[in-house]
Amino acid sequence: MPSAETVEVDFIAPRHLAGGGDLAWITVPLHRACGWSHGNDPLMPRVILSSPDQKALLRLEPDPDSQWWTLQHAPEPDRPAWYASFGARTPVEIIAGFIDALTDPTAAPAPPQDALHPLLNAGWSAAYSHHRFASPDGTVSVDIHETTGTWWIGTLLEHAQPPVWQARFGEHTPPHLIAAFTTALADPRPVLRTGIPHLPTRDPDLVTHTRQEVPAVQLASALEDRIRTLAARHTTAAAAPSVPRRPPAGPSHTR
Image 1 (cartoon, rainbow, N blue to C red):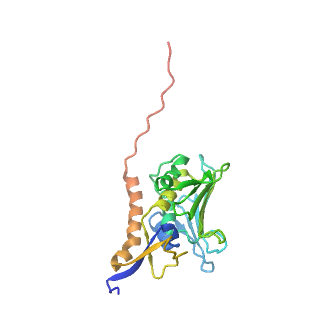
Image 2 (image 1 turned 90 degrees about the horizontal axis):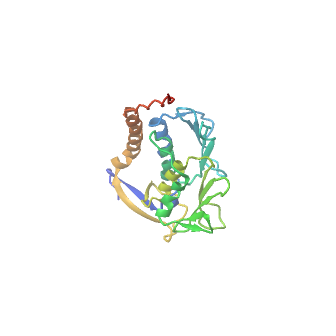
Image 3 (image 1 turned 180 degrees about the vertical axis):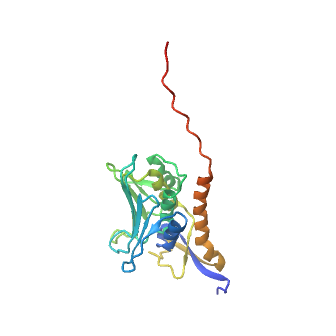
């Protein structure tokens, strides 16, 4: 039995079958660490967060027949508008990989093929064609549209049932953000759930959950630690000295 100083938690693996988790793992750091503003409409069961530059809008809307998380990004000089969306049972730890890369002031672009490296390194294999990849347990598939380049990632337990969750990335989604998502998806470390976790399956052949007692203070401070870590990125980026650009070479003079 847990004492006053400890809390019982479940560690779930693989993480893609751990259920959605605490939504505050995404929304609170976006607001407090990354400066995203939020609207307040008490009559609507939804959350809307906008980035400081007003180019990105994250909408969390509990619609059982659609994606719960939708991020829309405005066009930029080097990239058309793009979107990403995630189903209700997409684990917040996997969504966090994407969101944390989006808000990282030091993130660097990456070629499209980099998004597949985390999956291939984790033992995922091509299925049916070189545009579809499957997880080792066969419950997750990644489909890349050959023409448009859109990504559909889905967790499916039985073909007769709807997907447990889906993630969708529009054709112009920056590849380094998809790579951050696939890195979090392929991470073998279990994720933590409290209370009675609502798992999509308890089949011991597919999912393992280990109940442990952890210090209550450790559990209570996890979100605050995450906020501090993300906020420190912006402080570090602001303090980094800027490298002066070399002036362009003038026209050559010939005699």
